[in-house]
Length: 457
Image 1 (tube, rainbow, N blue to C red):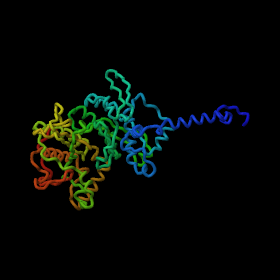
Image 2 (cartoon, rainbow, N blue to C red):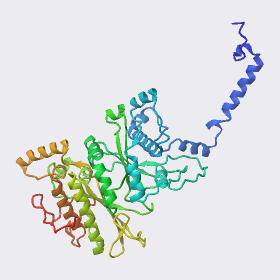
Image 3 (cartoon, rainbow, N blue to C red):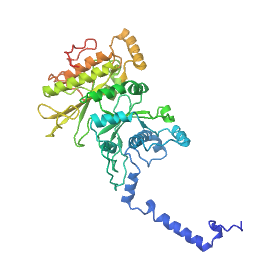
Image 4 (cartoon, rainbow, N blue to C red):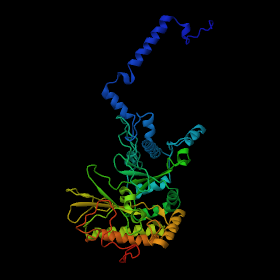
């Protein structure tokens, strides 16, 4: 169109002017971006694109398809960080386009906090967790080094700083296949609650009693759940079972100095019927499956009589609470590390560290995995199947089908044996592989559990 004098049309400009504009564009494209960076700078900026170590964003094609677990964990980490960083004032109503986009997502999540005021009261009033430090633990990693100094008002948490913290993969630590993440500072763990009946039990039945118990028993050894996150709306990913909708944020029992090496034991009564161990031939079951059923208790746990009494009393109170709410199959996470002259926090506690009588070991312990409710349909179904099986083979109950107070009875016996001086797990001449489910000479049978001494409840 010859009559169009629009200067934005290059056809209306002199040839020399167009060439000059083009040359400037070429100079700009070769004097900025990665093309002009030195190798160190490029490497630095490439790592800044990967806020989570287990997400390799350079992968493409088949490599990207094979990295679905890593991308799934990265999506969970981003969702958790966003949910814990968001304030009530910053929440905005979703647009229709955002709602549709969220529903069509396979990996991405939008999480919200469940009953945040109750958890804030627990963290601040009873567990004495600094809110600013808590939020900083979940902050998304960034390469920004400059920070803006902001003073918090009295009674409010200090705002999170730019830093290098965030969530990293902790591997598959559970027999149920849950996803575990931990904060880079090692203070907290995030666990997915994949089973629907467990999340329903936690939110609808156990939550309110748990808050009341934690508030009235500040020495309780129940794992401290500092937040529960959930997806308010379903997505294709959650409907297809790719991404769970519920997550628990918990304290990390092994928090503290990163140079301290801890040995952990996931303990539960092993005189129950375990099909993977007692029914299927060992050669047909991978050793790692058997090892994850329950750990062999450590031998030689020697603590003061006061510390031993404290552990049994606390576990007795907490297991009575769990039995009252029909929880079974929970375990005692027991950890130990070499003291090496390291002082324990005063006053000593089983949550922060108890020194052995000879001063060589530091012990810690908490109760966890208490979401299997005996009265739920799945548990009742399993109990019925095991009952029919026992008519033929008489193997006894499983940890997930036994009665709550019977499970507590055997659990307390296990704790008593753990603190006894006798080497009851195995003969001195027959060492047992660490992590294996051992049957010692003094292990009681499934049908004749030991008689417990009176326990203070």
